[in-house]
Length: 362
Image (cartoon, rainbow, N blue to C red; front, side, top):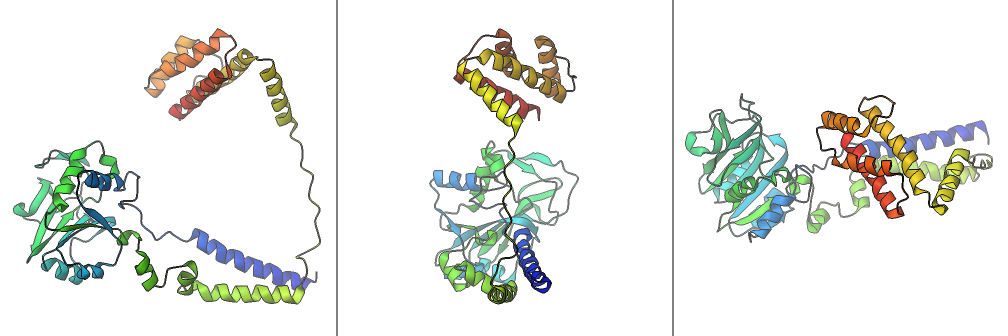
């Protein structure tokens, strides 16, 4: 291949790689924290399921805010922000609320106070666990639904026929509070109004109904790329590659013979030895050798050196270092000390217990 052709090929490949990497390394703009499809600690999947179990009619809203005008009945819309917004309303939100609707916004910006990060706040529903130092100090006492001497955590503002409820924490009833159901019940009391249709805003988390995707021209991947600035670059790169292939119509270079795989003698030896031990049913030998190796690795992780320690001494250090029960460790050490053949099932169980111990230590 001529030098000029090789340079052109390399340039085209480099350009294509740069574009590909830009897609892979580009920041993910879809925000997942706080959405009801999530089972993560900061998600709201458990609370959504809780509301359904209570017999509450609740729906996910996956359309722009402006489409709420099409709803005939009064609506309560819950928004769980993935990042803090200002405790104020946009004109479109205020106008919608004044018509008799309710907007609940979890996660608004406010000053950090001197309060403890973890507090238990009293409410008519029970003690609500709050994990934030942020307090809103401009709300009047009658507006505060949840708060302490440092300020409001949850408060409401009335606007003509409707109202808005703010919360300084977006994690008011997140999955992390499944062991404190008062949080779930408290949020349910805020949003559950008998004459209102209850919606949870998932559009702010990137979820869109099929008709919305169609109207925004993002129903398929091609339509999405067609609206991005990268699309003209992709077209140009594609045309350049086609021209180069048509002009050269040859391989990128000379054929290269494949290297013969190198046999790993150590691996082959280990596999062969394992086969012999299995046929000989020498599980006691495996337990003894593997047990010694596992014990030394455990002692090293605990900072106890490489000299095998007696079982009782090792159990004592385990409790001191990890602060957990030594029953599991005692069981594997006792089996190791028996030096008797065991079944393959028991052997696999024994190895699994060692793996569990390594996870606990780490």
